[in-house]
Picture 1 (cartoon, one colour):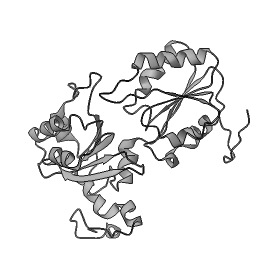
Picture 2 (picture 1 turned 90 degrees about the vertical axis):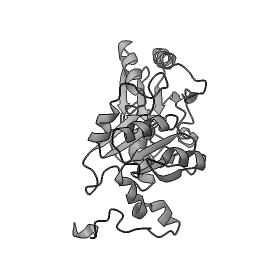
Picture 3 (picture 1 turned 45 degrees about the vertical axis):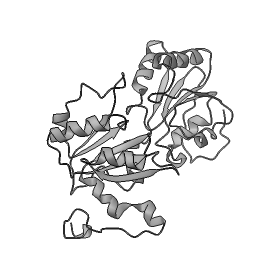
Picture 4 (picture 1 turned 120 degrees about the vertical axis):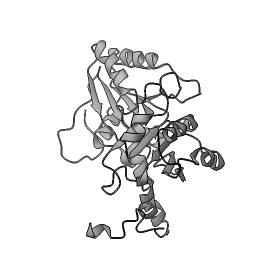
Length: 283
């Protein structure tokens, strides 16, 4: 099969009939696709995609059948087992199957479950990582998940478990005490409980927090708040998921690193948001 689009010289892998490639589509902006993802889109016979995959990304696969398999909290959606078995059936029918998932398939994306089912049914697979929303989405908001003057650790957690409830297996006390920056996926529904857990474990009410909705897209919204007021501020701003929530002092860096605001002509609000009293160049 030949490519009908230009890619740099490279021994690009071929998506063979009967194979399933599990691919991360990134957090939303089509420009954040990897070249391997683009290569896969142009070869697939079938693309099974999630709710967070932007429609514009599917334009890269005009030759393929597009099958929606999105799962959104509180809304009717396909069961995970059925999705996994559908991938098996398509592969056994000799299709070139691309499973396209928002962000990275192995970061709270159930990609591991799907890959496991495929391997159990002797379906050959390839994993194509993607930019996770917990990193890329926050970067588009001007929030670095690590900064050497802020944190030497970051913890990524999910806001709900398989039942849709706040994960009971998480040790919120240890997370609160052990991680300087906490990034929460799918946490909007249970943010009141999560904030209460963290505050009870000793996090300050005044700790900076941010909520980034529909990250990296034209509809992106960013709320800067504090751990003590995050619940009320989300309600007042009428924010809706999908959202990434960041808790920690790295949120303060948005005051100087809001690059989208600067592109629109806004000046940085504070060149020294961490209160270091010295320039970054002198560090």
